[in-house]
Length: 156
Image 1 (tube, one colour):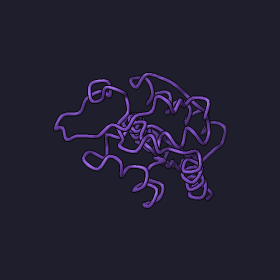
Image 2 (cartoon, helix red, strand yellow):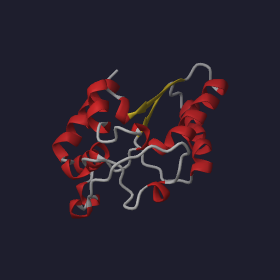
Image 3 (tube, one colour):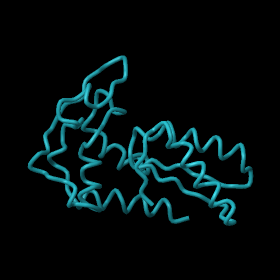
Image 4 (cartoon, one colour):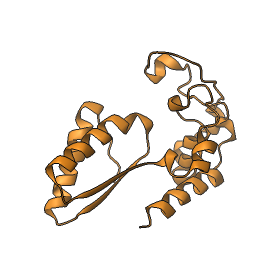
């Protein structure tokens, strides 16, 4: 299921979906996060779910943290501020693997990250929307390796 929503509603929507699944007798839910800026609402929803449904097992998995080697490979093009990657080699490769029609590699650029004390919206931090020094090296093959590692970890 792919949901596009505003952040201020996202945690409530995740909670509502978990409640519906719970009422359908599902007791294990994997929340696979594909976008760094969704962390806040997803983890907030998880805490509320834990509180209200004590026998429901919930796991949040951020794709970029699935294995240490893929985390390093997918984020090493943002060495100064690794938490600020966006459309970098890892993300671009994953989208090339699953939805290549959404990627126009002729528009890809390599854009350096830089140190900042405060956090900013991506359009304030980068001119292109990209934060990654190796975005132009993104490939579907690398994206398949990342998505396969997520699959292996989720295969419980």
